[in-house]
Length: 97
Image (cartoon, rainbow, N blue to C red; front, side, top):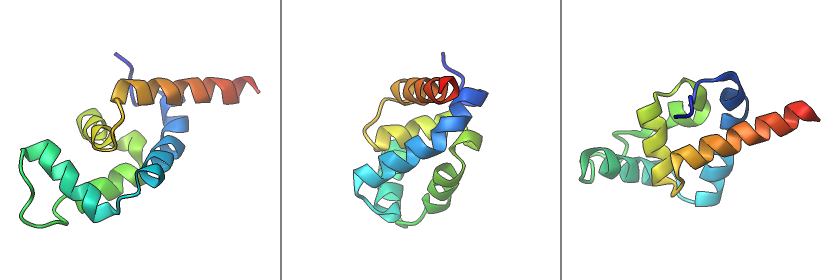
C-alpha cells in the first residue's frame, strides 16, 4: 500500500486535491453532504456537519488521516490509490527536472 504521508506524496498532494476540487464543481457544503453520506450512509442533519473536516483535508491533505483522505477522494470520484500514484509520479517528475 502507498503511504500517503511519505515526502513525495506530501509534496504533490495539495495541488492534486486543489485540482480535483476545482474540477468537481461542487461547493464545500455540497461536498460535505456527500462526504457525510459516504461516511455515515445517510445525509447529515446539518449540511455543514463535515465542513470543517473537509476544510482541513483541502488545506492540508498530507496531515489528514488516510481513511478521511481516501473517503474524500471517493466523494470526488477518484480512486485514492490512483490519486496517490499520480501525486508520487508528479513529484518524481518535478524532482528530475
